[in-house]
Length: 616
Image (cartoon, rainbow, N blue to C red; front, side):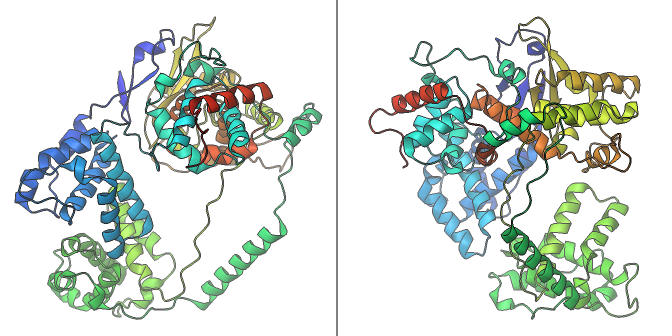
């Protein structure tokens, strides 16, 4: 038995029938989480107040179901920051967290963060974590979701998704018929938390009118067929079945091309003009006590003579960084002092003997060069990420150019058609060497068969594959992602199981061992799939191969959305925490069966007979 990201995987299920539960959510925290909470001591609370609140704070964090030590640290630090403010705690006794973490209390805390200059993303993270703790204290599902508030609409939709045996696409079509609007992320987002938390399990009663016998989650995933993505592609697939050639990509619209051209020209003009040094920041705008803490700071690892020279540039950086409170000065101040000391003596500096200036710190690629230096001196990955973040934030305060426009959210890439998927499978099987066949079969087979992308494939090794008894004449194949931010076990679709088994056979001939990654040699390498795709060839000399891993995953998701797969099973198998991907892909799904839509519509009306789900 192993615990993966808060989910306990029972090995006995891998050899027994799938009538048992495949994955069981385990609320008990790991020893790593408990140890991290035990040694945590907040800087924002005095020792006496922490003595009063420490025990209930740790218990509240445990109730939120932290998945690892880092998650627990984020929860406890944000809860302590909440208690440090005027939250209503009288500081004379143990705080009543359940009462303090009401919506009004959280909203007031977020207003204080906004007044302190915290960015919207930071405030949203605080809101989500505090709401997650409040839900844990109330005994509700603690699954992290952007919105978990139950309304009549979400209750009806959640009950339908649990009690109806059809596909998510059928429910979405029924929702549009009932409300007159397409199913949006705002509609589905709260439902993901409610369904995954099991709060509406009682709504699925055997014998309800219109309820069909649905297979269990793992078995349903195994038999999911490919789905044409749009009505237009149905005809295109029929005409191209003989050749299986991928369809040409849709050309960019004229308006989009003009937008990209303007953005490229603006970037080129900005690069040609060079950096523009901003005016010095105003110290009076700092939070109370921060300027005094900055004045008192002296680094321990920079010689005093050198520090006299570096201090003016360092001070400009730390003031531009704008620590929120005096206790927050130490870490960024130390990071920026080390960065300035490195920048003064870095290789290739134009004027090695000259004093360090703020303008030269705007040179292109300086942060990347500093990161390479950190790698050379053996700084761990987590510490390097923290240092890069501090340096980038401080350097942004030096740049006087207008900030670049934020990149708008790009919807997920559309799926491959069945003909394109078949062509990619043939391409993988017909690579010239066993090594190339093995790697490309893993990428294509696990992408189309289990929804794994580059983030997941980094954390799959040979021992992560196991046989699963689905009660059929032959066992199915399960793959386990053992790390990253989406650890899970997924049943490989029957249609692509042979492709993955062939890759496993080729992998075993190399005798690399059970713990070796299936791709590459190191799980820390990020571009794990790019070399595989770059080395793939076709029978035509000079022709390049284009395989988009995100589209392989989208193909698997669309197929599961068009099949009778329970929503909770789909979310768990895909490792999704948000409904955004599902709602984006609804536009690529074919028109569902009208009979299934009619049954789903009856379920929606039945779940809220008074007024229908309607929008809140």
